[in-house]
Image (tube, rainbow, N blue to C red; front, top):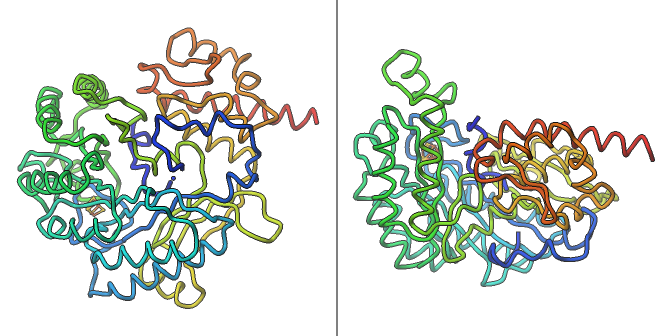
Length: 440
Ligand code: SF4
């Protein structure tokens, strides 16, 4: 179930300048997906593709650099940012996320240059959330202050575990002391603006060990926690170790138990769950990731980045799904030749857009309000789609799903089963959509 659910949102998604608790955009007058409010704002994701070494479980788009080409990479990221902003109808960037790879390997001046490029072209207010993923190595820590000066106001720290043995076997290039020091330094610079990534479902981990480790970690965490289940990906070193019997992974039942245990523990420590794998207190939700989950536009820059925005011109009113070229050297060549490394552009049909809004929106504990749905689907309401469905009725009766005057959302139990409910919801959406089309 969980492979998809616990993926990092930041790698491809983005919304408002407001905190989660202020997200009243859904209370406004409905707009069509092509309306100015939805097309003029976007968030920006910038991908730094390099890592110092490969973690044993990782299949992200990352490369070990053969030489130091930071200067070229910085120039190309600036150039592609410029091009894609010009190609979009965006006049305001509402959040920026530097992810990777290991973006804390980039020089702080590179981060400053990219932010400067954005602010020269569009509105980028000082209030905008600017997040940088940091690997908690001494090198990363030494640059935190300079990143902060460059404009970063939120750090997302890949702690993963505080167990020395586990960090080693996962191939991480930090130890638990590095993690604790980086966390303390980041909290000094951005109090309330530090997120910690924690991984569960690690080899030989039990629920008891996980529960103890999580409580220990929550004592030093700031106001935001992202949980990730370690998933076994083909082609990784970990996959081979498991295949050969060197390493044993916890069963699906155990990882499901660990997830529920984490939700309860986080709640006991004052964290509110606001998304499948994200927890916050004191209004410290990730505004960038919320923009993905609320179906806002986002521009993806850098090798392998993804984007969703309505392009300017060509009579375009429909959103495009864009994917940038994966391999950094090829991407650099393309950016130098034509200003961007877009490898694939697919125009999203209306049904495809609604599918994305549904899949993303259901990840949030607040789900999808009627007014939010109307922004994208003024002609077909949530009640029309799901209200008369027998299979949906069953999910409602089992208490896994809630459909009421607020909208559609998962119950506490249902959120853990989201992946098994989504296919049902998608079938109902498709069926209603086709019936509506046939009737018109
Ligand atoms: S640091 Fe992150 S992106 Fe790099 S290899 Fe490790 S998990 Fe993958």
